[in-house]
Length: 217
Image 1 (cartoon, helix red, strand yellow):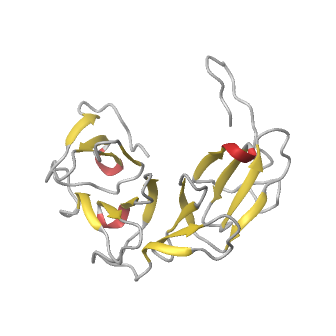
Image 2 (image 1 turned 30 degrees about the vertical axis):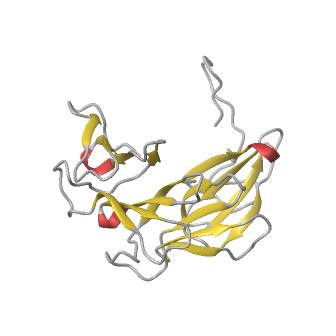
């Protein structure tokens, strides 16, 4: 759906033809980003459909599959238009440079566990100007930082087990990083938004202190 500023109703610009696997359909999409150069949407078309599709924003009746056979959850794009996709089945994040069909692993890919070179249920990501990938390692209740070319990640938030302490997360989802490398994370299982300054051993709650949220993503 597209909702313009101050609009009272939205406009369907992708899908809207029932749940399914047809080129004109989507099945519980999980993430979307705008590709400005092509005026298109890039959409994670669910784990069930197992694909990433590109859908023209203007008069697009069908999506075009650009990646297949992937349990896509989250998407990100860097300044070179390389596409990053988290795969919850293979426990990894892959980078697809323009024109590539297979991609290369940039985070995880070493099985499901909690070592620094592993992920467990990766969801959403943030990629900075240095192509560093920050990924919500949901099943391990932590945010991992993977420098471009690294063989293992660095814990930058959470990683102290499941819980509601200020040093803990539960099933983190969306993540963003500012110019000071401060981590902002949706702590979904604790119904709050956390801020973690660079190098901090614990975060602070910035939204969700008084029952304001209900499983944000």
